[in-house]
Image (cartoon, rainbow, N blue to C red; front, side, top):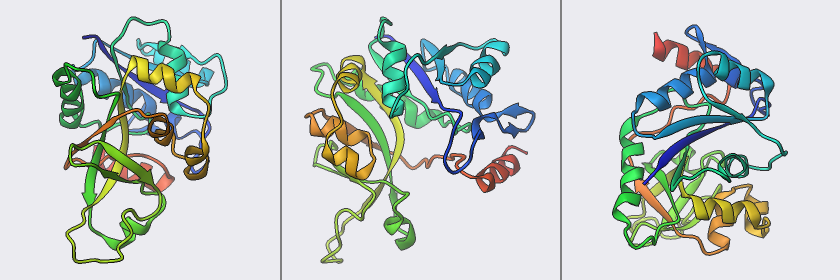
Length: 242
């Protein structure tokens, strides 16, 4: 089974423009993320795929592998699909470009899902962890996920799901971490199928997979992601690095 990591890297960002090219302890955020992905030793290859000459040159000039997007894309999945369309790979891991502190263990757990899935019932794998703080639960920036008894995703939402009409029933609220592992076939199906209403409403690309009947296996982890979405996040990351 050939497994690669692809890091989609847009230069533009609504909340923090050019965040991937910001300095983080003497290296850019995107370079640190790329090097962290390689250092896990989990992948047969690692690529950055980008729409930016700056990001492309940053990776290439430091001895890395980068691919320039040819088309404009609505989502990270689309950008990755274009990049891997003609590659001979089985599983593609989407590593977020703004998460330079990659934790190896949850990635290992995601890969293990596919190694155990001999009947190929899993189209995608992704990560979640429990949140208990009420402000975190109601925050629309935190995407929540609910699953069936086998751990397959039923729905993702920015809203509170499930709605706590009855609070004393032992519901656990799970936050989705946007790291995906795709079977290549599922990723290419996504690339070729049009957006439907649920994805358009919530602005969550994973809903396209569910709307078209793909099965997303969720893996619970205790390792929350450390992303850089704001200048304040960058300052925290610098302190963590030092």
